[in-house]
Length: 323
Image (cartoon, rainbow, N blue to C red):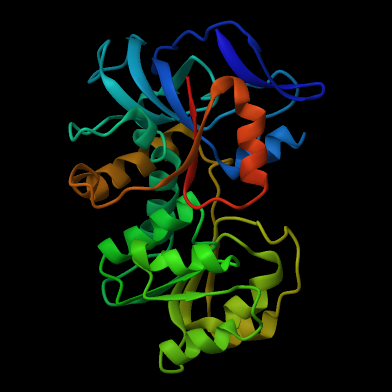
């Protein structure tokens, strides 16, 4: 089968062996695959958890048609249209654990649209609802809100009853569009005065929850903008893996600072994350209330160009590969 793999000189598309499903897995004929920042990390030569290195098939999510299932799998059959999070999605075929596979809603959703959802849904339901403990009527700030997962976080927060939803983007054009996805206020995380904007919007209290995809340079500003007994959920490090941290301010505001990643979770953990997400959000997915825009599509043989487009950081929403 054709797949986009990490080669000696960058990402290349070549023939590799087709995967076969294990007892708890589903084999999917991939029709579309979504791009994620972790793919860029691996394509640059860095490991992402235990994944990466020469010969690795890139990709963390896809949509397509079930070909076959392992002996322990129930609820799926050949021909089902599905979306899933899985390694190796930049390929004509991929295997996914059954707990990360979902049937595509029968609402005319295309494979391209379906491929934008798996990572964003599981990541941001876990960050906003489970780790972030969002309650109806609370205020939320999503740092890095113009990414695909960021746009989903805005929508989930609004869907779950947040009173005030704030999103950040350093790009003025993308910042202006955040309101279309549920943001009541859009800020520029590069503007030194953004914490004052957040405090003003919350009557001096600060937000109850920050879902942070930036880290690095915004760490101390996040502390200033968070309410006493608020929560910060560290999801991403787009602004840097290291930075100054005001431990006294953290203590004074008694903030819960929570780190999340899927890299150190067990198979059972991820199944439960997907179960909770589906129970909570699937009616909204079926109704079309939670959806992501597609910035641009590329054919599989242009996977390197698609990743370069993501690296340029000029997109709003998701970039999708078509098989």
